[in-house]
Amino acid sequence: MQKSWWLLLTAGALEIVWLLALKYSEGFTRLWPSILFAVSSLLSFYLLAMAIKHIPIGTAYAVWTAIGAVGSAAVGIILFQEAATFLRVLSILFIVAGIVGLKLSAQQTG
Image (tube, rainbow, N blue to C red; front, side, top):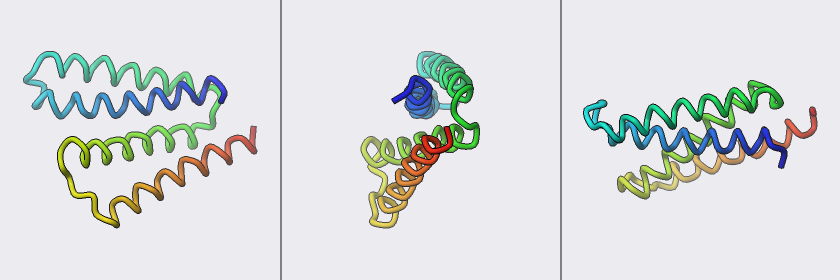
């Protein structure tokens, strides 16, 4: 996998980190989660900016947000005991299929 895609995947993973830090910051009233939020969100945006130098912006942004959506839904189910209904899991799988489709289509165009 080319470097830009690794940057994008890392940016997406950091989106999950900053989302969790945001939750644990309790409205920015807790110092360390607030700092983790700031650092991880800035790094996530920076890596996204680096990735879009070589990946079409529509593809990169869709993949980045999808990683965050799937990751946050999974974290919600695993850490916060949110419902893992059939429809919810199926919807997550559709998002994953969309990510794969975007990756494959980006390979065909360049």
